[in-house]
Length: 381
Image 1: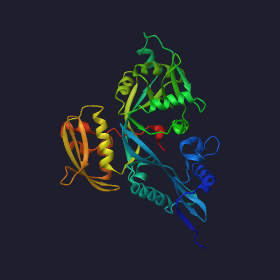
Image 2: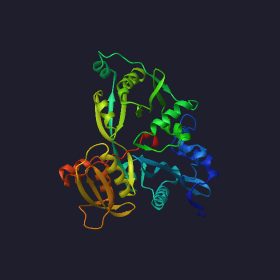
Image 3: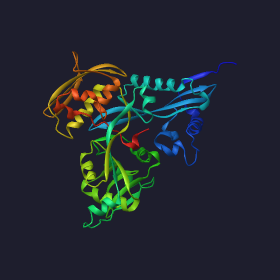
Image 4: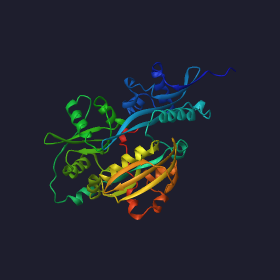
C-alpha cells in the first residue's frame, strides 16, 4: 500500500466546510442543536477565519487532526498581554496513536514562542496537557446562593424590582452600553465592538442586561458570570431578582473582584476556591510583572525582593520581583537566585492555589501569591 501524502500545517480557507464537519463529527455534535458555530460563534464563523487558526494534519487531502489556536489580548489594568488559546483538539478515531495531536500541539506552541505570545490558555485533562506545559491556575471563588438564603437575609427588606432582559443582535443600544461597561473592568480581554455579542454568547450562554426603572445598570453572561455593574450598591437587588426569576445559582467570582466577593460572601450558602482554566506561561517576566503590579492596586503588599531562576517552557529566565512602598516591578536578573523552579513549579508558585515553595518565603511576602491571573469564561476557547 502506498504511503499517504501528508500535510501538516495551518489550515486554508477552502477547507472551511470540511473542517466544521470534521470537528462536529469527532466531538459527536449533530450539526444542529450541537455545533461548533453555535457553541463558539466568536471562533467558528467563516468571517473569523477558523481555518487559518487551526493546525491540521491531512492524509491525501482528508482531515485527520485539527487543533485551534486563537489570539486575544488580555488587558491587565492597562498593560496588554498577548494570549493564544488552544481549542477544538480533534483527531479522527481511525487515526489515533499516530502522533497527530502531538504534531499539532508542537506546531502551535512553536509558533507561539516565535510570535512572542505571553501566555496560552486551554481547558482539558491536566496530565494530558501537562505534557505541553499547561497546568491549572487562576484563582476564583465558587459560591452557591439560593432562595432560602434570600428569605432569611432579607426578611424585613422590601424587594426592589429590576428588569433582566436577554440581549440579542438587534439590541444595538444595550450592546453599546455593555461594551462600554466591560471596558471599565481593570482585568479584561480586549473585545472588538463588532464581536462583543458573539464573544459574550460563548458556550451557548445567554447574555442579559440589567435595568432599573428603564436605565441600564449592568450585565452578565450565563449564570451571573462576568457580572458587571455601574454601581456595586445594586448587587443585593441583582441577586434577589436573579434567584426569584431563574432559581438558585452557582456563581464564579475572580480573585481580583474583592468588593463583589465580600458582598457575595454575606449572602451565599457555600463557597470554595478553585481555578479558572489551564495556563502555560511563556513570558514569565511580562506576565508576572503585569499581575504583581495589578495586585498592588487590590491590596497593600509587604516590601521585599525575590529572585527566581525558572526553567520555563519557552526557555530559562532569571527575574527579580520587587515591591517597595506598594510599587511593584519585575526585571531581568543576573546572579544567584533565591529559588530555582521548573516550569510547572513556577506556574503553581506564582499563579496556582498551592506551592510548597511559598513556605520558604518570609511570612510578610507570602501575601504576594498567588498572583490574580484570570480570564473570563466567555474569553476561553
